[in-house]
Length: 164
Image (cartoon, rainbow, N blue to C red; front, side, top):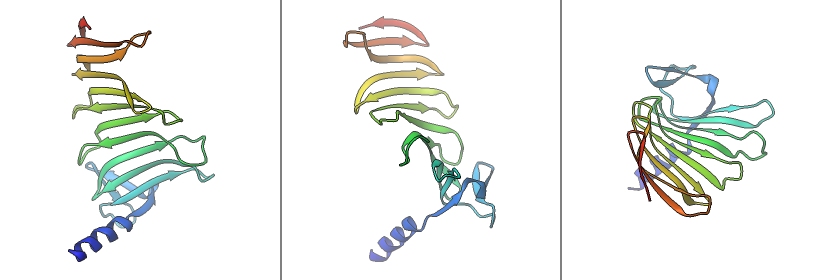
């Protein structure tokens, strides 16, 4: 048991960090240019002034997630995080953040790259939610009106059916 824990921790801490330009992709897999082997670790794009702009997290050649950062801050603050379906570059989920990190928007996608759900949160409270089917509003849309009252709007294939 202890050996398993040690091996897991050593792999976690020994992840390689390279520049984006040190990698290439082929057949939805990511390889390291220097040895043509599947890459596991983190790839970063950093500006000449040292600002972190973008990074990718890769496991056994498969892109797991990417993060782009705001460039106006000393400390890297995420602007958007994207998670990917296994063994593809197809996005599964995007999370967009405002600079203050008090607001975020989650967008979910199917394998055909069509939206299935959008949610918005402000200070960790759900303020908007809408379901989609084939890229059109389909199901319940949850939001607030100008006076702060909760609204639930039903859609079917992009057409509004009812409001509660």
